[in-house]
Image 1: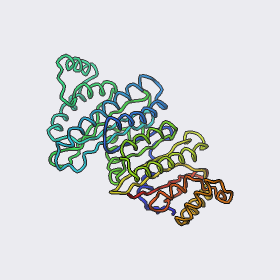
Image 2: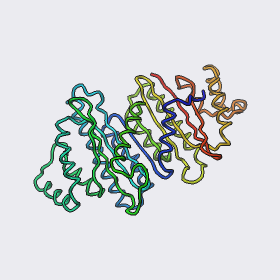
Image 3: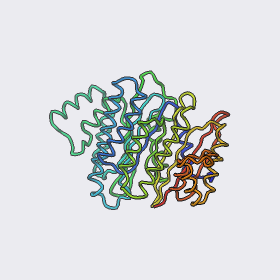
Image 4: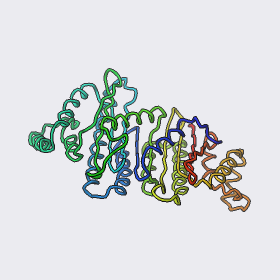
Amino acid sequence: MEGNPNNPLIDLAYRLFNRIDDTDFEYIYRGNFSQKISKNLLALAETNVKDSAGRTSLKNKIYFVMVEGLQNVTKHRDKDETDIDGTPDSDGMFAIQKNLGHYYITTGNIVKKNEENTLKPKLEQINIMERDDLTLLRKEILKKGDLSDKGGAGLGFIEMARKSGKKLMFDFEPVNEQASFFYFRTEIPGNDTTEINNSFSDESKSLDDVKHLNEALDHEKILISFNGRFNRENTLSLLSVIKGQMNVSMTSKKVYAVMVELLQNISKHTSDIEGDKKNRGIFMLSKKEDTFVLTAGNLLHAEDVPKMKDRLEFINNLSDKELYKQYDMILLDIGSANERKTGLGFIDMRIKSTTGLNYIFKDINAQNTFFVLQVTIKN
């Protein structure tokens, strides 16, 4: 069925797709953190950094900050999920964004009030220190071994400040009387001569930006959002993250299979889009109670829209019996089944979906249209 123009997930996908330049990316994960999931998150982020960051020294800085940030989230979650009673959501978040040549790594996690009271003055102290002073402080901590059990404001934060050359951005959003959500953001300039002239330019605005983004994703219960290029490595890493997040059930297998189809479609439909927009798209996975919603968006040649719309309408109008018959006919390569060139992918997604395939087309210009396809799977 053609999508409702007021569909919040489709609207959000369109807004997120348009918020960054074609050569940049934005990758956000929200949910459970484990060593395995952190490893997969790093693999996906590293792939994008490798493709976009030129200098080895820059890649090393970015990778170091990502590792430190993920370790902090995992350490806090391991302890705080049992220590904080009544906390509504102890899940964390990880985001890496590239915007006009600059990289932003953001983590978020629950901390207890006493930890907030300890962290805040130490981070403020780091921010007023010059690089040479930070180097001396680092040596002093190494000498005395003055580190908290979670690296409180120890070597990790000091090293992130030294390597980025920027002030550390942080904030504490109250969750309840016992705890706060700790946002921590590091900016790494990709090029010393690059000037930022958008919403990320002001440090406070850049932190507000990711907070508002996290709130928008939380409102729609989005577990993961990736906005960038969908090459083979990115696709495999995304699949690994989702696989690590889910238990082995019939629903999770359906979600995984549909995700494979959607990611392949993004790559397929954008493979011949010209310039920097090639292979660029957005994918979001959300979960509300017992329902998963998978939303994928990408550019499509405007001339291909009528044919695509015809295929989707044809599939959505088939009964369950007709769907399986069509599936078998294509599988057996019976000629009449390919008249509309529906393909197994769309039919398979329709079979696995709880409702029909939801979709919408938004005109970008005379050449390109933004195509969003959404599949809902209920447990």
